[in-house]
Image (cartoon, rainbow, N blue to C red):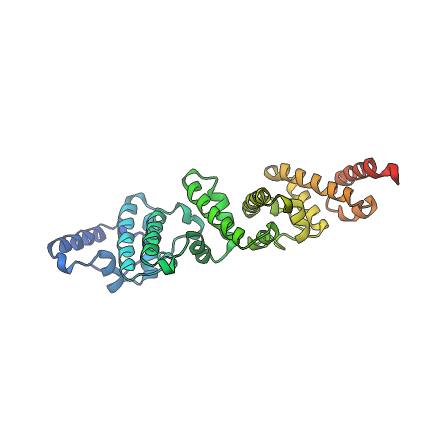
Length: 301
């Protein structure tokens, strides 16, 4: 059989299935010389990158998913024999980073990691650290975990990874401001509105809640953290942009109220504030702030 083309779903081809059956039968007849189909493929036809691409394509087709998982399992056994570390295995598998939590191979990989850690107690790797290195972007990981918690099939693993991550931040004595920077929220949204719809922000908010519960004397808030990382004028722009989007309107209104209260307590003059509210063409924020300010300070002015 000619096994050179790697285009399309090669596992769906009848000749490929016949070849797999041939290899299995041969291994059953000569167990002492048995060699898995995956080993034959990588030794004679495809490198790991090409084979991973082929199997990932086949994994998305229900008619070939079982066979793809079988071949991936054989590869895991080969890597186990070579004591390949879990991070390298993830890299070799080339699982789609965007959908990795839903990938059928993830459970098998997790078992591989557990077995590796049992065999190599001095080289133990956590699931979080491995994922972090694989994705090479903590912002991407935060968004992945926040989105994953909203999907029943991935909620459990997303929560497990979150627990590991938050525990690491706690050991490192990370404040919410440190975490805000770690997930790439600082400086990402200068004078724009998407911050309030960013899954990474909501993931960060989970840490904020946990931090405040564990460290009541160091409590902080979303508005305090935003003001440490953005100018008030930029925050106003975020609020105005987010208020016109139905999914972020409520969050934007709450953030607006928090900001106005901060300004009132700081005795920010409405004239000064007016220069920061140019993004609000309706003038509603200025009118609201002026009323709050006068109610609090006008009598004593």
